[in-house]
Length: 321
Image 1: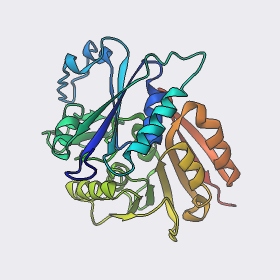
Image 2 (image 1 turned 60 degrees about the horizontal axis):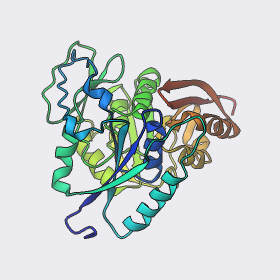
Image 3 (image 1 turned 135 degrees about the vertical axis):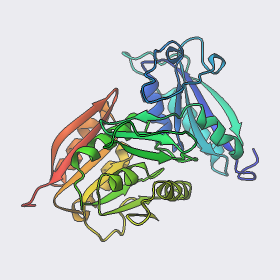
Image 4 (image 1 turned 180 degrees about the vertical axis):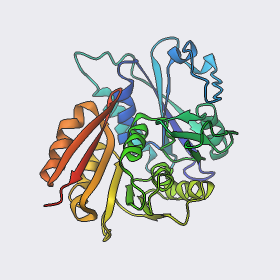
């Protein structure tokens, strides 16, 4: 491998089954993938809703004859070989009497940076994610279908969070319900900036987005300008809430379950009394451990949102705490 010369990326493709694809997807997220794509041959015969003007251009040659391909993307740097070893070990350990993981075959491909956006464009089309929010990529022409529709324009670049993954959708649904005009919002692990942008368009007065990944920071700033909310949203490089000394009405964190658990020690001091905490990136079998940690920090769980095998937890810091 050439390292970061030319900023090449590695595509890790795991051949698994439909019932295991969410678990394998989560494995790649936990390994640090900058985006995950699922190629399911069922999509080739699915009758897609084209009411928003979407065009689905799917090439059968990209899909397995059986099972699904789950693809993750990693920078080709000096840590890559160690990362690959960890992924192989984690895949080998996938075992459950009730779940068929299929072949678990790993295929490695190299992708040049200039090919990245082209690779994403075949998967990423306008999509309605809530009752009144639609996400459209910057290269698509999209006109509002009604006056109160909120349209978020994104160029996902190399950051995760296009609005097509369940965890992002769940956060957007929760933000639509809980953000009130004039609120302040903290977005932990901002990725493409989609949740920060949504908060601003929903009426937030000030939004603070944090991410540790410089690629995500660059992507988020680009998207904030695309949506004209740079006067409301500020993006900074930061590790979770470490060192953050502001308080917000809402904190949203679309992270891995393990990072949400780590984050919780700082949430009570960064969340105003009566404020709302929204956490996603949690697979169903991790729900209880995350919920237990949230409650142990004095927050009360208000509701749990579910989409496929993913959940989001909405909790509040009660006034008397």
